[in-house]
Image 1 (cartoon, helix red, strand yellow):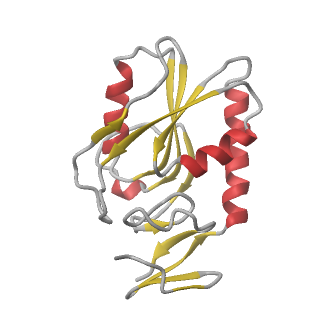
Image 2 (cartoon, helix red, strand yellow):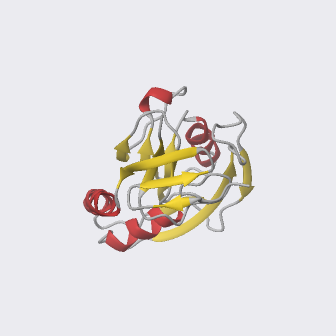
Image 3 (cartoon, one colour):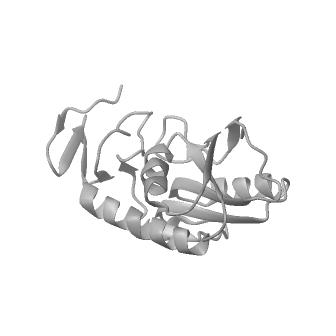
Length: 187
């Protein structure tokens, strides 16, 4: 079972693995505000539907929409491609459908992290069947060197190296989402 053995300001120890701070809380919040300002400008006079990908994006989406200065709606759906592992299984499963109708609507898909791009590709194919007016993708983290699929990310919080990260909604076997910083697995 994965559990925190010790946590200090910049380091989290989980068993034999050491995670170090990649982005602190202040840096994350500053970037989230910048992204929200851009989205507010881009959707002025519109009411986009923010669609959070559970479970990872819920903290990011919560902070993001608090800073958006236009009307908006929110919905969630859930995918699985990681299970309890540190790398994607390569298979995406839809675990929870949307509750709203997105036909003819401006939608913004909100992801915590884009790794290979497989989930985004799956999402684009899924939502294109619903004929939204527009569809954009907002991701807190993107691993450009890990992308295996050609996907467009319209709003990027941070580009990061191809390393495993936890905190601020990002998990390891469903744990560590509650950490305020984003930590990266140390060498």
